Length: 336
Length: 249
Image (cartoon, rainbow over all chains, first blue to last red):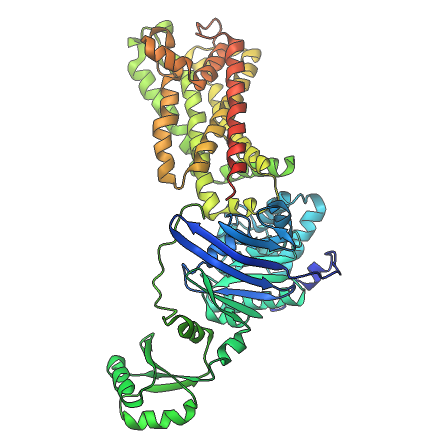
Protein backbone atom coordinates (compact mmCIF):
# COMPACT_ATOMS: atom_id res chain seq x y z
CA UNK A 1 0.00 0.00 0.00
CA UNK A 2 1.35 3.36 -0.98
CA UNK A 3 1.76 5.23 2.27
CA UNK A 4 1.61 8.61 0.60
CA UNK A 5 -2.10 8.85 1.10
CA UNK A 6 -2.57 12.54 0.95
CA UNK A 7 -5.33 14.58 -0.49
CA UNK A 8 -3.31 17.76 -0.71
CA UNK A 9 -3.07 17.73 -4.45
CA UNK A 10 -6.68 16.86 -4.96
CA UNK A 11 -7.74 19.64 -2.70
CA UNK A 12 -5.65 22.25 -4.41
CA UNK A 13 -8.38 22.64 -6.98
CA UNK A 14 -10.69 23.73 -4.22
CA UNK A 15 -11.43 27.40 -3.78
CA UNK A 16 -9.46 28.65 -0.83
CA UNK A 17 -11.53 30.84 1.40
CA UNK A 18 -9.34 33.38 3.04
CA UNK A 19 -11.67 35.02 5.49
CA UNK A 20 -11.47 32.54 8.31
CA UNK A 21 -14.41 33.52 10.42
CA UNK A 22 -15.32 31.63 13.51
CA UNK A 23 -15.25 27.94 14.20
CA UNK A 24 -16.13 25.29 11.64
CA UNK A 25 -18.68 23.63 13.88
CA UNK A 26 -20.65 25.17 16.72
CA UNK A 27 -22.78 23.10 19.06
CA UNK A 28 -24.68 24.83 21.86
CA UNK A 29 -26.79 23.27 24.60
CA UNK A 30 -27.78 20.54 22.18
CA UNK A 31 -30.40 18.09 23.36
CA UNK A 32 -32.06 15.14 21.72
CA UNK A 33 -34.70 12.98 23.28
CA UNK A 34 -36.06 9.68 22.11
CA UNK A 35 -39.28 9.45 24.07
CA UNK A 36 -38.21 9.40 27.69
CA UNK A 37 -34.57 8.77 26.96
CA UNK A 38 -32.19 11.68 26.64
CA UNK A 39 -29.55 10.69 24.11
CA UNK A 40 -28.02 14.17 24.36
CA UNK A 41 -28.59 16.15 27.51
CA UNK A 42 -27.11 19.54 26.70
CA UNK A 43 -23.86 19.38 24.77
CA UNK A 44 -21.74 22.43 24.00
CA UNK A 45 -18.48 22.61 22.06
CA UNK A 46 -16.81 24.19 19.07
CA UNK A 47 -14.57 22.72 16.42
CA UNK A 48 -12.00 25.06 14.93
CA UNK A 49 -11.15 25.28 11.24
CA UNK A 50 -8.67 22.64 10.20
CA UNK A 51 -8.89 20.75 13.43
CA UNK A 52 -9.27 17.01 13.92
CA UNK A 53 -11.87 16.70 16.61
CA UNK A 54 -12.65 13.36 18.21
CA UNK A 55 -15.94 12.48 19.84
CA UNK A 56 -15.15 9.66 22.19
CA UNK A 57 -17.32 7.55 24.33
CA UNK A 58 -18.89 4.18 24.89
CA UNK A 59 -21.67 2.94 22.66
CA UNK A 60 -24.89 4.60 23.68
CA UNK A 61 -23.04 7.63 25.00
CA UNK A 62 -24.65 9.91 22.42
CA UNK A 63 -21.94 10.04 19.76
CA UNK A 64 -24.03 8.66 16.94
CA UNK A 65 -27.00 10.86 17.80
CA UNK A 66 -24.75 13.91 17.72
CA UNK A 67 -23.24 12.74 14.45
CA UNK A 68 -26.65 12.33 12.83
CA UNK A 69 -27.75 15.78 13.96
CA UNK A 70 -24.63 17.34 12.46
CA UNK A 71 -25.21 15.37 9.25
CA UNK A 72 -28.75 16.87 9.06
CA UNK A 73 -30.32 13.43 9.30
CA UNK A 74 -31.90 13.91 12.69
CA UNK A 75 -33.39 17.09 14.12
CA UNK A 76 -32.33 18.15 17.62
CA UNK A 77 -34.99 18.45 20.30
CA UNK A 78 -33.44 21.66 21.63
CA UNK A 79 -30.29 23.69 21.19
CA UNK A 80 -28.18 24.78 18.26
CA UNK A 81 -25.84 23.05 15.87
CA UNK A 82 -24.26 24.84 12.96
CA UNK A 83 -21.56 24.05 10.44
CA UNK A 84 -19.65 26.79 8.62
CA UNK A 85 -22.22 29.23 9.92
CA UNK A 86 -25.23 27.29 8.61
CA UNK A 87 -27.76 26.04 11.11
CA UNK A 88 -28.61 22.37 10.62
CA UNK A 89 -32.32 22.98 11.21
CA UNK A 90 -32.75 26.33 9.46
CA UNK A 91 -30.67 25.64 6.37
CA UNK A 92 -29.93 21.93 6.03
CA UNK A 93 -29.27 22.27 2.30
CA UNK A 94 -26.35 24.66 2.92
CA UNK A 95 -24.98 22.34 5.60
CA UNK A 96 -25.21 19.39 3.23
CA UNK A 97 -23.20 21.24 0.61
CA UNK A 98 -20.56 22.17 3.18
CA UNK A 99 -20.01 18.74 4.67
CA UNK A 100 -18.79 15.37 3.55
CA UNK A 101 -20.25 12.48 5.49
CA UNK A 102 -18.71 9.06 5.96
CA UNK A 103 -21.06 6.63 7.63
CA UNK A 104 -20.17 3.71 9.79
CA UNK A 105 -22.51 1.37 7.96
CA UNK A 106 -21.15 1.13 4.47
CA UNK A 107 -22.85 3.47 2.02
CA UNK A 108 -21.13 2.23 -1.08
CA UNK A 109 -23.34 0.14 -3.31
CA UNK A 110 -21.73 -3.27 -3.46
CA UNK A 111 -23.14 -4.00 -6.90
CA UNK A 112 -21.49 -0.90 -8.31
CA UNK A 113 -17.80 -0.41 -8.94
CA UNK A 114 -15.78 2.04 -6.87
CA UNK A 115 -15.74 4.48 -9.73
CA UNK A 116 -19.48 4.13 -10.34
CA UNK A 117 -20.14 4.72 -6.67
CA UNK A 118 -18.26 8.00 -6.85
CA UNK A 119 -19.97 9.00 -10.10
CA UNK A 120 -23.43 8.42 -8.65
CA UNK A 121 -22.40 10.31 -5.54
CA UNK A 122 -21.21 13.23 -7.68
CA UNK A 123 -24.59 13.40 -9.42
CA UNK A 124 -26.21 14.00 -6.05
CA UNK A 125 -24.05 17.09 -5.72
CA UNK A 126 -24.81 18.34 -9.21
CA UNK A 127 -21.42 17.29 -10.55
CA UNK A 128 -21.30 15.48 -13.87
CA UNK A 129 -19.46 14.61 -17.03
CA UNK A 130 -15.73 14.44 -17.64
CA UNK A 131 -14.78 16.72 -14.77
CA UNK A 132 -16.61 14.48 -12.33
CA UNK A 133 -14.91 11.38 -13.69
CA UNK A 134 -11.54 13.08 -13.49
CA UNK A 135 -12.12 14.17 -9.91
CA UNK A 136 -13.33 10.68 -8.96
CA UNK A 137 -10.27 9.01 -10.48
CA UNK A 138 -7.98 11.51 -8.76
CA UNK A 139 -9.47 10.61 -5.40
CA UNK A 140 -9.32 6.88 -6.04
CA UNK A 141 -5.69 7.32 -6.97
CA UNK A 142 -4.97 9.32 -3.83
CA UNK A 143 -6.45 6.59 -1.72
CA UNK A 144 -4.74 3.80 -3.59
CA UNK A 145 -7.89 2.23 -5.02
CA UNK A 146 -7.46 3.41 -8.61
CA UNK A 147 -6.23 0.04 -9.85
CA UNK A 148 -9.45 -1.53 -8.64
CA UNK A 149 -11.76 1.24 -9.73
CA UNK A 150 -13.58 -1.13 -12.07
CA UNK A 151 -14.33 -3.82 -9.52
CA UNK A 152 -17.62 -4.18 -7.68
CA UNK A 153 -17.30 -2.81 -4.18
CA UNK A 154 -18.32 -6.15 -2.71
CA UNK A 155 -14.97 -7.53 -3.91
CA UNK A 156 -12.95 -5.01 -1.88
CA UNK A 157 -11.59 -5.64 1.60
CA UNK A 158 -13.03 -3.71 4.52
CA UNK A 159 -10.10 -1.32 4.58
CA UNK A 160 -10.24 -0.59 0.87
CA UNK A 161 -13.96 -0.14 0.97
CA UNK A 162 -13.61 2.34 3.83
CA UNK A 163 -11.19 4.29 1.68
CA UNK A 164 -13.73 4.39 -1.12
CA UNK A 165 -16.22 5.67 1.47
CA UNK A 166 -13.85 8.46 2.45
CA UNK A 167 -13.17 9.30 -1.18
CA UNK A 168 -16.93 9.47 -1.62
CA UNK A 169 -17.23 11.89 1.29
CA UNK A 170 -14.51 14.13 -0.12
CA UNK A 171 -15.71 14.09 -3.71
CA UNK A 172 -17.36 17.51 -3.73
CA UNK A 173 -14.49 19.12 -1.84
CA UNK A 174 -16.19 19.74 1.50
CA UNK A 175 -14.46 21.91 4.09
CA UNK A 176 -15.78 19.76 6.90
CA UNK A 177 -15.69 15.99 6.96
CA UNK A 178 -17.79 13.99 9.41
CA UNK A 179 -16.63 10.44 10.05
CA UNK A 180 -18.70 8.01 12.07
CA UNK A 181 -16.54 5.29 13.66
CA UNK A 182 -14.12 5.28 10.72
CA UNK A 183 -12.01 2.48 12.12
CA UNK A 184 -14.80 0.15 13.23
CA UNK A 185 -14.32 -3.29 11.76
CA UNK A 186 -10.86 -2.55 10.36
CA UNK A 187 -7.81 -4.63 11.10
CA UNK A 188 -4.80 -2.90 12.70
CA UNK A 189 -3.06 -2.43 9.36
CA UNK A 190 -6.05 -0.74 7.82
CA UNK A 191 -6.42 1.40 10.91
CA UNK A 192 -2.86 2.59 10.54
CA UNK A 193 -3.57 3.52 6.95
CA UNK A 194 -6.67 5.37 8.07
CA UNK A 195 -4.52 7.39 10.41
CA UNK A 196 -2.33 8.39 7.47
CA UNK A 197 -5.41 9.44 5.58
CA UNK A 198 -6.48 11.63 8.48
CA UNK A 199 -3.06 13.22 8.67
CA UNK A 200 -3.31 13.98 4.96
CA UNK A 201 -6.67 15.65 5.50
CA UNK A 202 -5.26 17.73 8.29
CA UNK A 203 -2.35 18.93 6.17
CA UNK A 204 -4.84 19.94 3.60
CA UNK A 205 -6.85 22.04 6.02
CA UNK A 206 -10.00 19.98 6.12
CA UNK A 207 -11.83 20.13 9.40
CA UNK A 208 -12.53 16.61 10.60
CA UNK A 209 -14.99 15.51 13.21
CA UNK A 210 -14.85 11.83 13.97
CA UNK A 211 -16.61 9.61 16.43
CA UNK A 212 -14.83 6.63 17.86
CA UNK A 213 -14.73 4.27 20.74
CA UNK A 214 -11.10 3.49 20.05
CA UNK A 215 -8.95 5.47 22.41
CA UNK A 216 -5.93 5.49 20.09
CA UNK A 217 -7.93 7.38 17.54
CA UNK A 218 -8.94 9.84 20.17
CA UNK A 219 -5.29 10.30 21.03
CA UNK A 220 -4.44 11.33 17.48
CA UNK A 221 -7.13 13.99 17.40
CA UNK A 222 -6.15 17.60 18.09
CA UNK A 223 -8.86 17.76 20.68
CA UNK A 224 -11.36 15.31 22.03
CA UNK A 225 -14.67 15.46 23.79
CA UNK A 226 -15.58 12.46 25.86
CA UNK A 227 -19.31 11.84 25.75
CA UNK A 228 -21.00 9.75 28.36
CA UNK A 229 -24.75 9.41 28.87
CA UNK A 230 -25.44 12.38 26.66
CA UNK A 231 -23.02 14.77 28.38
CA UNK A 232 -19.47 15.86 27.74
CA UNK A 233 -17.45 14.68 30.71
CA UNK A 234 -14.07 15.85 29.43
CA UNK A 235 -12.96 18.19 26.67
CA UNK A 236 -9.48 19.18 25.62
CA UNK A 237 -6.20 18.10 24.09
CA UNK A 238 -5.60 14.42 24.65
CA UNK A 239 -2.22 15.08 26.26
CA UNK A 240 -3.53 17.66 28.67
CA UNK A 241 -6.46 15.49 29.63
CA UNK A 242 -4.15 12.59 30.34
CA UNK A 243 -1.67 14.73 32.23
CA UNK A 244 -4.31 16.35 34.40
CA UNK A 245 -4.21 13.80 37.13
CA UNK A 246 -0.42 13.67 37.41
CA UNK A 247 -0.56 10.05 38.44
CA UNK A 248 0.86 6.93 36.88
CA UNK A 249 -1.12 3.87 36.01
CA UNK A 250 0.34 0.57 37.14
CA UNK A 251 -1.09 -2.57 35.60
CA UNK A 252 -0.31 -5.93 37.11
CA UNK A 253 -0.85 -9.28 35.46
CA UNK A 254 -1.48 -12.10 37.84
CA UNK A 255 -2.86 -15.63 37.96
CA UNK A 256 -5.33 -14.59 40.61
CA UNK A 257 -6.14 -10.97 39.87
CA UNK A 258 -9.17 -10.80 42.16
CA UNK A 259 -7.26 -11.98 45.19
CA UNK A 260 -4.30 -9.77 44.40
CA UNK A 261 -6.51 -6.76 43.96
CA UNK A 262 -7.95 -7.15 47.43
CA UNK A 263 -4.56 -7.74 48.98
CA UNK A 264 -3.11 -4.62 47.36
CA UNK A 265 -6.08 -2.52 48.39
CA UNK A 266 -5.70 -3.70 52.00
CA UNK A 267 -1.98 -3.10 52.15
CA UNK A 268 -1.52 0.20 50.29
CA UNK A 269 -4.88 1.96 50.68
CA UNK A 270 -4.67 2.99 47.04
CA UNK A 271 -7.49 3.02 44.49
CA UNK A 272 -7.32 -0.40 42.89
CA UNK A 273 -9.52 -1.73 40.14
CA UNK A 274 -9.81 -4.64 37.77
CA UNK A 275 -9.72 -3.84 34.09
CA UNK A 276 -9.49 -6.46 31.39
CA UNK A 277 -8.38 -9.07 33.93
CA UNK A 278 -5.50 -6.93 35.14
CA UNK A 279 -5.11 -5.22 38.46
CA UNK A 280 -4.89 -1.50 37.94
CA UNK A 281 -3.54 0.99 40.44
CA UNK A 282 -3.41 4.75 40.07
CA UNK A 283 -0.57 6.29 42.00
CA UNK A 284 1.93 9.09 41.67
CA UNK A 285 5.62 8.15 41.39
CA UNK A 286 4.75 4.73 40.01
CA UNK A 287 8.37 3.71 39.43
CA UNK A 288 8.99 3.84 43.16
CA UNK A 289 5.89 1.84 43.88
CA UNK A 290 6.72 -1.10 41.66
CA UNK A 291 9.59 -2.59 43.77
CA UNK A 292 7.42 -2.38 46.90
CA UNK A 293 4.62 -4.09 45.10
CA UNK A 294 6.70 -6.94 43.75
CA UNK A 295 8.41 -7.53 47.08
CA UNK A 296 5.11 -7.52 48.97
CA UNK A 297 3.55 -10.22 46.86
CA UNK A 298 6.32 -12.59 45.79
CA UNK A 299 5.33 -15.02 43.10
CA UNK A 300 1.95 -13.45 42.48
CA UNK A 301 3.05 -10.79 40.09
CA UNK A 302 3.60 -12.06 36.55
CA UNK A 303 4.15 -8.75 34.81
CA UNK A 304 3.98 -5.08 35.68
CA UNK A 305 3.63 -2.08 33.43
CA UNK A 306 3.83 1.53 34.43
CA UNK A 307 2.29 4.03 32.08
CA UNK A 308 0.98 7.55 31.88
CA UNK A 309 -2.80 7.69 31.97
CA UNK A 310 -4.54 7.17 28.64
CA UNK A 311 -7.84 8.63 27.53
CA UNK A 312 -9.39 5.47 28.82
CA UNK A 313 -8.07 6.32 32.28
CA UNK A 314 -9.47 9.80 31.88
CA UNK A 315 -12.86 8.25 31.21
CA UNK A 316 -12.59 5.98 34.22
CA UNK A 317 -11.63 8.90 36.44
CA UNK A 318 -14.40 11.19 35.17
CA UNK A 319 -17.21 8.68 35.29
CA UNK A 320 -16.09 6.22 37.92
CA UNK A 321 -16.85 3.42 35.48
CA UNK A 322 -14.78 1.27 33.25
CA UNK A 323 -14.90 2.30 29.63
CA UNK A 324 -14.64 -1.21 28.31
CA UNK A 325 -17.14 -2.86 30.59
CA UNK A 326 -19.82 -0.31 29.92
CA UNK A 327 -22.77 -2.36 28.80
CA UNK A 328 -23.88 -1.09 25.43
CA UNK A 329 -27.58 -0.37 25.72
CA UNK A 330 -29.46 -1.52 22.66
CA UNK A 331 -29.27 1.42 20.31
CA UNK A 332 -32.77 2.56 19.52
CA UNK A 333 -33.49 1.67 15.95
CA UNK A 334 -36.26 4.18 15.69
CA UNK A 335 -35.60 7.19 13.52
CA UNK A 336 -31.92 7.52 14.06
CA UNK B 1 -32.91 18.88 -10.30
CA UNK B 2 -33.39 15.96 -12.62
CA UNK B 3 -29.80 14.72 -12.53
CA UNK B 4 -30.06 13.13 -9.07
CA UNK B 5 -33.43 11.63 -9.97
CA UNK B 6 -32.29 10.04 -13.22
CA UNK B 7 -29.07 8.91 -11.64
CA UNK B 8 -30.92 7.17 -8.81
CA UNK B 9 -33.36 5.57 -11.24
CA UNK B 10 -30.53 4.36 -13.43
CA UNK B 11 -28.84 2.86 -10.42
CA UNK B 12 -31.93 0.73 -9.75
CA UNK B 13 -31.79 -0.70 -13.25
CA UNK B 14 -28.03 -1.28 -13.19
CA UNK B 15 -28.29 -3.06 -9.85
CA UNK B 16 -31.21 -5.12 -11.02
CA UNK B 17 -29.43 -6.55 -14.01
CA UNK B 18 -26.40 -7.36 -11.87
CA UNK B 19 -28.48 -9.44 -9.50
CA UNK B 20 -29.83 -12.39 -11.39
CA UNK B 21 -31.79 -13.67 -8.42
CA UNK B 22 -33.95 -10.61 -8.48
CA UNK B 23 -34.66 -10.93 -12.17
CA UNK B 24 -36.22 -14.29 -11.49
CA UNK B 25 -37.93 -13.42 -8.20
CA UNK B 26 -40.40 -10.83 -9.37
CA UNK B 27 -41.23 -12.58 -12.61
CA UNK B 28 -41.32 -16.26 -11.77
CA UNK B 29 -43.89 -16.18 -8.98
CA UNK B 30 -46.62 -14.35 -10.90
CA UNK B 31 -46.06 -16.46 -13.98
CA UNK B 32 -46.22 -19.62 -11.89
CA UNK B 33 -49.43 -18.52 -10.20
CA UNK B 34 -50.89 -17.70 -13.53
CA UNK B 35 -50.02 -21.05 -15.06
CA UNK B 36 -51.30 -22.99 -12.04
CA UNK B 37 -54.50 -21.04 -11.46
CA UNK B 38 -55.14 -20.46 -15.12
CA UNK B 39 -54.66 -24.05 -16.17
CA UNK B 40 -56.33 -25.44 -13.06
CA UNK B 41 -59.48 -23.37 -13.14
CA UNK B 42 -59.33 -23.46 -16.91
CA UNK B 43 -62.78 -23.86 -18.37
CA UNK B 44 -64.63 -24.03 -15.03
CA UNK B 45 -64.59 -20.25 -15.27
CA UNK B 46 -67.82 -18.90 -16.64
CA UNK B 47 -66.81 -15.32 -17.48
CA UNK B 48 -65.15 -13.82 -20.52
CA UNK B 49 -64.98 -16.60 -23.01
CA UNK B 50 -64.64 -19.27 -20.34
CA UNK B 51 -60.84 -19.45 -20.35
CA UNK B 52 -59.25 -18.51 -17.04
CA UNK B 53 -55.72 -18.55 -18.40
CA UNK B 54 -56.86 -15.85 -20.76
CA UNK B 55 -58.83 -13.97 -18.13
CA UNK B 56 -55.98 -13.86 -15.60
CA UNK B 57 -53.35 -12.83 -18.15
CA UNK B 58 -53.73 -9.09 -17.64
CA UNK B 59 -54.00 -9.51 -13.88
CA UNK B 60 -50.75 -11.44 -13.87
CA UNK B 61 -49.03 -8.57 -15.64
CA UNK B 62 -50.25 -6.31 -12.85
CA UNK B 63 -48.99 -8.78 -10.28
CA UNK B 64 -45.52 -8.57 -11.79
CA UNK B 65 -45.67 -4.80 -11.29
CA UNK B 66 -46.90 -5.28 -7.74
CA UNK B 67 -44.15 -7.71 -6.77
CA UNK B 68 -41.49 -5.53 -8.32
CA UNK B 69 -42.70 -2.51 -6.41
CA UNK B 70 -42.72 -4.50 -3.19
CA UNK B 71 -39.12 -5.64 -3.72
CA UNK B 72 -38.05 -2.12 -4.62
CA UNK B 73 -39.76 -0.77 -1.51
CA UNK B 74 -38.06 -3.27 0.76
CA UNK B 75 -34.72 -2.18 -0.67
CA UNK B 76 -35.55 1.39 0.37
CA UNK B 77 -35.90 0.36 4.00
CA UNK B 78 -32.57 -1.44 4.06
CA UNK B 79 -30.77 1.11 1.94
CA UNK B 80 -31.82 3.97 4.14
CA UNK B 81 -30.63 2.46 7.39
CA UNK B 82 -27.36 1.05 6.24
CA UNK B 83 -26.67 1.61 2.63
CA UNK B 84 -26.37 3.84 -0.34
CA UNK B 85 -29.42 5.92 0.55
CA UNK B 86 -27.70 7.23 3.70
CA UNK B 87 -25.25 9.29 1.71
CA UNK B 88 -27.95 10.34 -0.75
CA UNK B 89 -29.97 11.75 2.14
CA UNK B 90 -26.92 13.58 3.48
CA UNK B 91 -26.38 15.17 0.06
CA UNK B 92 -27.94 18.43 -1.10
CA UNK B 93 -30.07 16.64 -3.71
CA UNK B 94 -33.64 17.94 -3.29
CA UNK B 95 -35.91 15.56 -1.41
CA UNK B 96 -38.47 15.51 -4.22
CA UNK B 97 -35.83 14.44 -6.72
CA UNK B 98 -34.71 11.63 -4.43
CA UNK B 99 -38.31 10.41 -4.25
CA UNK B 100 -38.69 10.78 -7.99
CA UNK B 101 -35.49 8.82 -8.55
CA UNK B 102 -36.61 5.91 -6.39
CA UNK B 103 -40.13 5.87 -7.82
CA UNK B 104 -38.93 6.13 -11.42
CA UNK B 105 -36.44 3.37 -10.69
CA UNK B 106 -39.20 1.13 -9.36
CA UNK B 107 -41.38 2.00 -12.33
CA UNK B 108 -38.63 1.13 -14.79
CA UNK B 109 -37.96 -2.18 -13.03
CA UNK B 110 -41.63 -3.11 -13.15
CA UNK B 111 -41.89 -2.12 -16.75
CA UNK B 112 -38.88 -4.06 -18.01
CA UNK B 113 -40.35 -7.21 -16.47
CA UNK B 114 -44.02 -6.78 -17.20
CA UNK B 115 -43.63 -5.63 -20.79
CA UNK B 116 -41.93 -8.78 -22.11
CA UNK B 117 -44.65 -10.81 -20.42
CA UNK B 118 -47.24 -8.68 -22.16
CA UNK B 119 -45.75 -9.75 -25.48
CA UNK B 120 -46.92 -13.29 -24.69
CA UNK B 121 -50.55 -12.20 -25.04
CA UNK B 122 -51.02 -13.90 -28.42
CA UNK B 123 -50.27 -17.29 -26.79
CA UNK B 124 -53.57 -17.08 -24.93
CA UNK B 125 -55.53 -15.84 -27.89
CA UNK B 126 -55.09 -12.13 -27.36
CA UNK B 127 -53.74 -10.76 -30.63
CA UNK B 128 -51.69 -7.60 -30.18
CA UNK B 129 -51.99 -4.63 -32.45
CA UNK B 130 -49.37 -1.91 -32.49
CA UNK B 131 -51.84 0.55 -31.05
CA UNK B 132 -52.97 -1.94 -28.42
CA UNK B 133 -49.41 -2.64 -27.43
CA UNK B 134 -48.57 1.04 -27.14
CA UNK B 135 -51.66 1.74 -25.04
CA UNK B 136 -50.92 -1.35 -22.97
CA UNK B 137 -47.38 -0.17 -22.38
CA UNK B 138 -48.68 3.23 -21.31
CA UNK B 139 -51.08 1.65 -18.83
CA UNK B 140 -48.25 -0.52 -17.46
CA UNK B 141 -46.05 2.53 -16.95
CA UNK B 142 -48.79 4.43 -15.12
CA UNK B 143 -49.71 1.46 -12.95
CA UNK B 144 -46.05 0.79 -12.17
CA UNK B 145 -45.55 4.43 -11.19
CA UNK B 146 -48.62 4.27 -8.97
CA UNK B 147 -47.55 1.04 -7.25
CA UNK B 148 -43.96 2.25 -6.81
CA UNK B 149 -45.20 5.44 -5.19
CA UNK B 150 -47.55 3.58 -2.87
CA UNK B 151 -44.74 1.17 -1.98
CA UNK B 152 -42.35 4.05 -1.34
CA UNK B 153 -44.91 5.82 0.81
CA UNK B 154 -45.28 2.88 3.16
CA UNK B 155 -41.62 1.85 3.05
CA UNK B 156 -40.55 5.32 4.10
CA UNK B 157 -42.71 5.03 7.19
CA UNK B 158 -41.67 1.50 8.03
CA UNK B 159 -39.06 1.03 10.69
CA UNK B 160 -38.24 -2.45 9.50
CA UNK B 161 -38.76 -4.88 6.70
CA UNK B 162 -40.99 -6.91 9.02
CA UNK B 163 -43.26 -3.93 9.51
CA UNK B 164 -43.50 -3.46 5.79
CA UNK B 165 -44.60 -7.05 5.33
CA UNK B 166 -47.68 -6.21 7.36
CA UNK B 167 -48.53 -3.34 5.02
CA UNK B 168 -47.93 -5.60 2.09
CA UNK B 169 -50.41 -8.15 3.40
CA UNK B 170 -53.19 -5.80 4.44
CA UNK B 171 -52.87 -3.11 1.77
CA UNK B 172 -50.95 -4.10 -1.34
CA UNK B 173 -52.03 -7.70 -1.83
CA UNK B 174 -55.76 -7.04 -1.20
CA UNK B 175 -55.54 -4.13 -3.60
CA UNK B 176 -54.44 -6.54 -6.27
CA UNK B 177 -56.90 -9.27 -5.25
CA UNK B 178 -59.90 -6.99 -5.78
CA UNK B 179 -58.55 -5.20 -8.83
CA UNK B 180 -60.34 -7.51 -11.19
CA UNK B 181 -57.22 -9.59 -11.60
CA UNK B 182 -58.88 -12.72 -10.20
CA UNK B 183 -62.58 -12.12 -10.82
CA UNK B 184 -64.57 -9.57 -12.82
CA UNK B 185 -66.48 -6.76 -11.21
CA UNK B 186 -69.59 -7.66 -13.15
CA UNK B 187 -70.39 -10.79 -11.13
CA UNK B 188 -69.23 -9.56 -7.72
CA UNK B 189 -71.59 -8.91 -4.80
CA UNK B 190 -72.69 -5.34 -4.33
CA UNK B 191 -70.32 -4.40 -1.49
CA UNK B 192 -67.39 -5.96 -3.29
CA UNK B 193 -68.37 -4.01 -6.37
CA UNK B 194 -68.09 -0.80 -4.38
CA UNK B 195 -64.72 -1.81 -2.98
CA UNK B 196 -63.47 -2.60 -6.46
CA UNK B 197 -64.67 0.74 -7.81
CA UNK B 198 -62.80 2.51 -5.01
CA UNK B 199 -59.57 0.66 -5.81
CA UNK B 200 -57.13 2.63 -8.00
CA UNK B 201 -55.50 -0.54 -9.19
CA UNK B 202 -58.80 -1.71 -10.72
CA UNK B 203 -58.58 1.25 -13.09
CA UNK B 204 -54.98 0.45 -13.96
CA UNK B 205 -55.91 -3.10 -14.80
CA UNK B 206 -59.00 -2.00 -16.69
CA UNK B 207 -56.87 0.38 -18.73
CA UNK B 208 -54.56 -2.49 -19.63
CA UNK B 209 -57.44 -4.79 -20.58
CA UNK B 210 -59.13 -2.14 -22.67
CA UNK B 211 -55.85 -1.66 -24.49
CA UNK B 212 -54.98 -5.25 -25.28
CA UNK B 213 -58.37 -6.98 -25.49
CA UNK B 214 -60.40 -5.75 -28.43
CA UNK B 215 -64.00 -5.21 -27.47
CA UNK B 216 -63.35 -5.95 -23.80
CA UNK B 217 -66.40 -5.70 -21.55
CA UNK B 218 -64.76 -3.43 -19.00
CA UNK B 219 -66.69 -1.77 -16.18
CA UNK B 220 -64.99 1.57 -16.86
CA UNK B 221 -64.51 3.49 -20.08
CA UNK B 222 -60.92 3.35 -21.34
CA UNK B 223 -60.41 7.10 -21.02
CA UNK B 224 -61.77 7.01 -17.47
CA UNK B 225 -59.43 4.19 -16.51
CA UNK B 226 -56.37 6.00 -17.83
CA UNK B 227 -57.42 9.26 -16.21
CA UNK B 228 -58.04 7.68 -12.81
CA UNK B 229 -54.82 5.67 -12.65
CA UNK B 230 -52.81 8.67 -13.85
CA UNK B 231 -54.34 10.92 -11.20
CA UNK B 232 -53.83 8.31 -8.49
CA UNK B 233 -50.19 7.87 -9.56
CA UNK B 234 -49.63 11.62 -9.35
CA UNK B 235 -51.40 11.83 -5.99
CA UNK B 236 -49.37 8.96 -4.54
CA UNK B 237 -46.16 10.59 -5.72
CA UNK B 238 -47.09 13.91 -4.14
CA UNK B 239 -47.94 12.09 -0.92
CA UNK B 240 -44.44 10.55 -0.91
CA UNK B 241 -42.73 13.88 -1.51
CA UNK B 242 -44.72 15.62 1.20
CA UNK B 243 -44.05 12.77 3.57
CA UNK B 244 -40.30 12.86 2.97
CA UNK B 245 -40.09 16.64 3.16
CA UNK B 246 -42.08 16.81 6.36
CA UNK B 247 -39.86 14.16 7.86
CA UNK B 248 -36.97 16.20 9.20
CA UNK B 249 -35.07 13.11 10.05
